[in-house]
Image 1 (tube, rainbow, N blue to C red):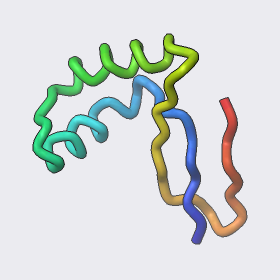
Image 2 (tube, rainbow, N blue to C red):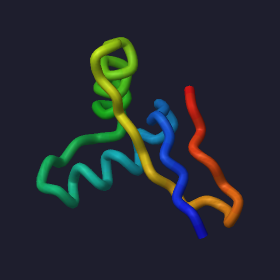
Image 3 (tube, rainbow, N blue to C red):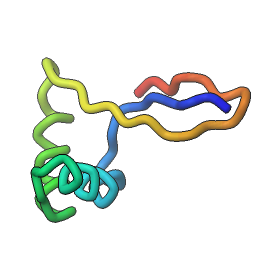
Length: 62
């Protein structure tokens, strides 16, 4: 199985919030939505997520 790397989306906020908490940076999903909005608006930033893909998955580009 491959891993798909893609740009984060607002819908990823709940899972990102969980991961931030596990790393010692607790945040609510609504706070993460705001942060994602800032990153997406900044042409010098990238916020990527990895997710399991199918055996034939490829990298998605925004």
